[in-house]
Image 1: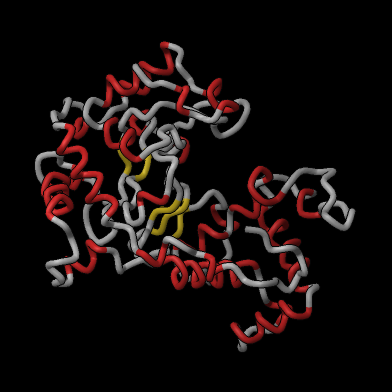
Image 2: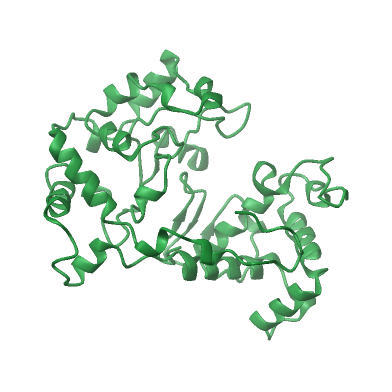
Length: 326
């Protein structure tokens, strides 16, 4: 939930340039008035059939056909308009929007206004700045134990993790290939490989490059890597000791049973991934078991206690009357 992020999604499909221009899959269809990249990002899950929009023929819980599925996949303005029609048919939502946007008439409200509200909520609810590491940086020398301090020194020193994981959010917001095994359904049935940034830029040199993730609360965000290839934080860290070997020896049995067959283990797929590994992480790294343990302790020191229970962010009810689940 950090407003400072300028690139969204693992493949960077939503970003904002230094001049304020947005680069998104919608191109010129993207409406004006978005508050920043977080708001721009919020415009897209609702347009994706597999995430939120659903399929033609779906019925809602009241047995009504899903009108949001009717527009074509590239007809994003029609999707956003249909969604706002659904939202503004609920009087309480109209009242809430009028409170949030008193200068905007209901007839002029677009999904960009909802996206701005979503972004504001994300910043308010999910910004974490009170981890032990934060407190240590602010001058509380007792906030980190000695093993955590050793882990930090290794992280930013010998292990060179800080080459990419740097700054206040421990990310350079750039894209790197680190040879993560390909698991999961990919981007579509016809595209089982997730090509990362190359899917956005169409550049061969960007094959299998993914955005460096921020590491705040990283122990809570498993499974790890862009596709969830590693089911423990330790396994994700160990990958970096020898990225090429970790790619070639990957054990898919750690995955949920229904995902194991999705591992792309054929020679061509593995060689393509190996060829994309960034020079920053190509050379094997020698760390002792104790040093790995210290790095893991440091990573866990990035957890804000407030992030351990996000139950307070879940409303008791919503204006639509739909059930609010766990």
